[in-house]
Image 1 (spheres, rainbow, N blue to C red):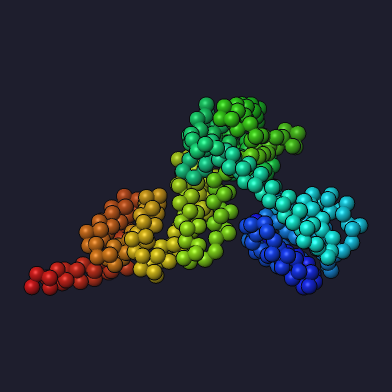
Image 2: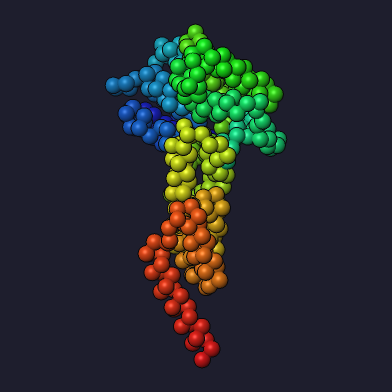
Length: 386
């Protein structure tokens, strides 16, 4: 249970921290303590707490207003208000606070609050485990709660593309004119409108076929716009970005988490779909993953775990075969492992890739390094036979 404490006075803040640390409830982790509202709002998304203990009477922005803003940023966070004045109780619960503690906080009362929070946390974990996942990495798939993965099949390619577009803009209103201009630019308005209605109907039927009834298409602007509402389902891209954002720097204690997040990227965004509108997002996500891969590979290299670094780079090569720098890094890693055959292979693979994809030769830096390596390697072999 990740907890943030907020109180403009240091004494009650310290007392609450002490009580929580002495609590018999397992799994409590205090990830932040704050005495002013502005700092909280700057840090809260990065901290991703499950629970916020929040004082109501504070200078500037009071706790009720701050609680509302925190819930806007983190809709699933639970808020427990603390104050010395019980007249705020009704306002606190109107804000959907899970509980309300009067100061000075007593241990038995705090234990009851923690017990309630624990039950809610367990319930949420079970619910999350039962969620269906929509996969956008590599294509458009549905993963059922039991782990069964299906490639979504569609009656028309246009319905598939429109669903992918709406899913990428989920929970946002997309204007009807925008859809018509993007998907049926050459059709007259009446024909395009009929095609749009048919595509929306097809999407709804396809969602029903795959048991995705919780994903709804609403029309909040009286047919002038649509909104795809995603509830009780997880989108793999969203989940990956959230975990990537929360990662601490790579070190021995965080290595397992980094490896898990690295493996979550299973292919480019909608990788089997040639959609022009998806190219910007595809490139952005790819660059984020490649940057993370570089950090992970560099950590292994610094710690002389070259085999692990090679595994990272080989996975990058499998998913992003056109990354020239990755071949070069693998050449240098294989050199450190004294695997001359693998260095040669990577050099030849690089030359082939560049010729086929870009009709160019390796850059001078790579060629210079390779010539130098080749010379040293040949001298070493001659010395070995002399």
